[in-house]
Length: 451
Image (cartoon, rainbow, N blue to C red; front, side, top):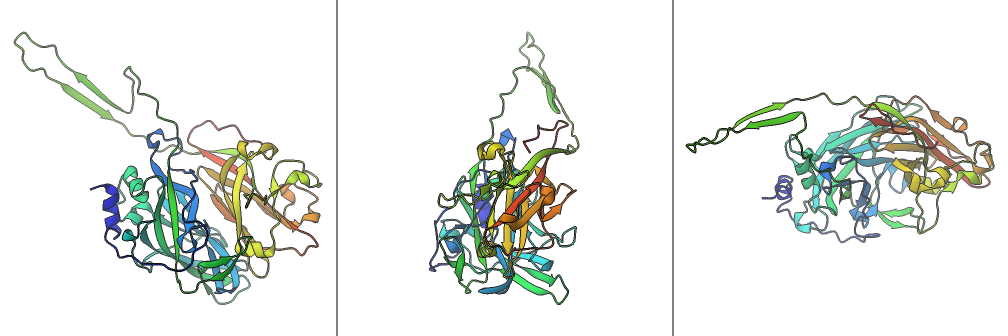
């Protein structure tokens, strides 16, 4: 029996009943290839092994609408009091859920109910809702921070934690390098008003049934108390391992074999084998400054969403980087994009994609920006500027609306106090900036990128 078949049976997927879904769907019916990972980075032994793409999730109930950060709501689904996001991210052999605070509230608890529905495009593997497995998220180390839930590949597949990496990846990517598994998810928790008061509950937003041309959801289906999330896998594209040396070399594991010459009586030869194995402690990670990161928003329908900083006339604006000009309605629906380091001359082809940013707002115009970095990158400083575009007289991050320094190499960060969306006669200017470190397993730091 193939390992993939075995683990699917362990999840209860081998002979599950089909659950039809005849509601209208939106958009495409598959996930586009991204080919970004952290498991196989610089590991030539994983070359061409399928593994989950990072930051590449879709919502099957919405026609596989691309969404890494499903929305959360407090209050009614069609007129919420506040909105936030829970971002999904593959790191190592785990799926993480990062809950961001609601504007005007502090999170007090968060949890994830989950269940594997089955394999994308294979109804014979599908199970019935609702999700029945519960995870309680870890509380943040600092007040107002994010709640984080971790779901291991071994738990997803219902196999021992000692299962090998290759077998875990085979189960997580049952169709090899294409669409993979679907989850039923219920995201919930409680939040306390910043000014005091009783805790209120939050849940995920219902599946969207209608969107405007600018991607804003205007109608929802309240018949679904859960959401469905799918992901895809791609082959690890790292360099091939070098050929083994032709001569004997020393290593942590060695075998010595001696065979005496045959005797004149043709007696059987004897062989003695000695094996020595040594182990070493994991390397200490060295903190290296990588450079400056700016948030960028990918074009939609061929139309640019980001504007370069060098189009502004303010002091220090003649440099690379971008700003956004979202409306309140766009922020209430949530906007996001990659974080780039070293895009000198605003040339993205030169840059390093270190993670993503997500910006959301509630009905009162309170804005929260969340940074989520991929390993081995970490945050050292975060700066967010949210002002009227006409008021951007300086582009130095030290002059921004929100500033956080001396961040201890964290992968995620959100502004704990939401920012007020400004009242302007023209567009706003939203700038996401960060100082990014890279955690190196060697004593030598890579050359910093252009700041």
